[in-house]
Amino acid sequence: MTARVAVVGATGYTGSETVRWLLGHPLVEVAAVVSSSKAGTPLAEAVPALQGFTDLVLQPFDPMALADLDAVFLATPHGIARELAPALHTPLIIDLSADHRHADGWVYGQAEWNAPAIARATRIAVPGCFATAIELALAPLVAACTVSGPVNVAAATGSTGSGATPRAGTHHAERFSNLKAYKVLRHQHVPEIRAFLAGLGAAPAVHFVPLSAPVDRGILATCFVPVADVDAAAIVADAYAEYPLIRLRAETPELRHVRGTALCDIAVHQEGDTAVVLSAIDNLGKGAAAHAVQCLDLALGLPAHTGLSAVPPTP
Image: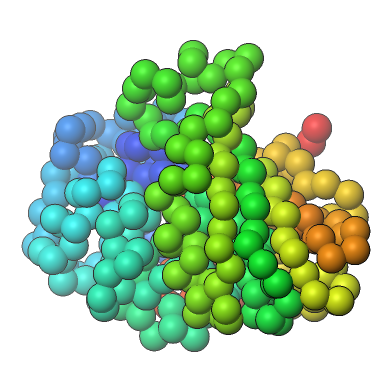
């Protein structure tokens, strides 16, 4: 059976990336694409990379026109999804924004760790990009009750994480040949990370410094984790042994190895009672759109990597 879906906000970075993944999914039909600002425009004109892959025309947001679909993806700017979601009557809504990550009635869509709840859900909130990279790095050690104190994290992200609308300090011209920290110890994803970890065990304090990197895509997170007398690498390897989208690296993950994919690469190094867990994702892939498609797979009763086996380019 083919699931018929729509993407609202289909011309933004996360929206067009969601469409890209869905167009290659063997059991999904993209039946509608929505953009309030570009309604009436062919999607392939608004997103030229999709030329030859779709004839869909962008339409205005109309809940009645979407009512007979199986799922709707909300890839809208933060603050918009909470206004649109109540009007939708589709069996499944998947929100890629931050609007419902702490909302009653919504399931947190961390696919590798919350699969049973996602499979039963009708409303799914996809984790944030930083949150995804950091949670996947820390979750095995928290779940194993081996974290013995606060965790310190530094993570660098690409410019697409700031969205398609240029803003002072976030668009690529400000980031090129530059590296800077921002929102030091006050990033909005920290409460999200701690809330998720608290569901696995005793959630440690997380001290987080995000870095604005001179790349367009990707997140590389470095997590310094105080641990008990354990083999941290073995715990992480055992936790992810059955998850094909999590790859363990011997040395360090690299952004180029996850670019354009649904993968998360993780490496663990340990010296005494300190483990350094590194994780790399594509912030638009595993950090947003591909993770949303994983949630769709689970909700449809499919293996959570269906349609997500893109091979990264080399070099």
